[in-house]
Amino acid sequence: MPIHEKSLIRKENLIRNEKLSLEGVDVSGDWSTFIGTRVITDYNEALEEEIAALPGGKHIHRCWQCGSCTNSCTVNAINPEFNPRYWIYLIRLGLEEELLRDKDIIWQCVSCNKCTYACPRDVEPEGVMKATAHWLEIKGHTRPSPSTIFDEEFSVQVFAKGKIEEGRLMRRFFTRTQQKLAQPWLVAIIRGLVSRMPIGLLTRLGLASLIHPRTQGWGKTRDAINEFVIEQQARQRQALGLAGTKTEAHS
Ligand code: SF4
Ligand code: SF4
Image (cartoon, rainbow, N blue to C red; front, side, top):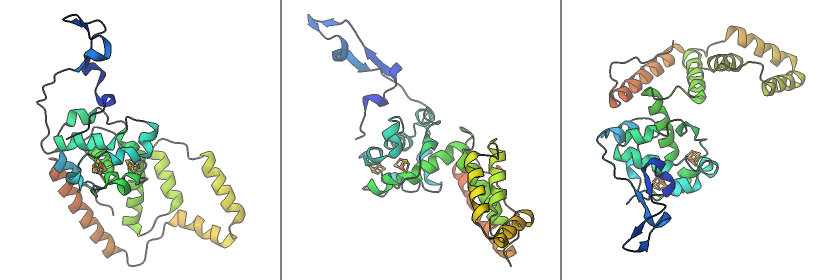
């Protein structure tokens, strides 16, 4: 049986009579608060399977709605509207439209994994939150989050060269997220590194940022990774009803 909290009921669905008397009994205010009747016709019956097909989501079916994930959640402690238990409930029922009402906060999970340790059913709610945020992006309900953009840039470099070059990674990330490269914290780190690092190491780092060397014999590994990534992306898109749409490989 799902747990319902008053805070989860949309204000427009709450009916309250400030002045009501029934057969001479005053039932004003809280005594006459009801949840309005709703008829839902737009279920997405595949929603649970769609989330389960994405990395992190595969154990969502185990949830028994105990609420331990939400009770232990770092973000929920700051914002009560961030509610993993409730979103898992909506997903399992196929209530996509209800889920979409919270689409702008689901990505805020900070991956602390407190929910994962608290969950008695090994649902791995942190993974489900990530899968749900990923689902929102793939379906076009939200723009790619900064963490998705960072992951993409990181992956592009690793897949192509077998290693990352930090300067290039940060430049690409800041450009794509429309942020200034001269972030005060970054400038402070670079100043600290420059003042402490041996000159030889600094020279090697500078050269690497210009040349971006590749791991030796990386070609075959890159091809195998690309093949796997394309296969996984195609499988996920098929599960989400997006078969035939673009997948990415990295050269
Ligand atoms: S991993 Fe995310 S959902 Fe889980 S407790 Fe941390 S912030 Fe909350
Ligand atoms: S702690 Fe686990 S079983 Fe309990 S509501 Fe959260 S995901 Fe479901």
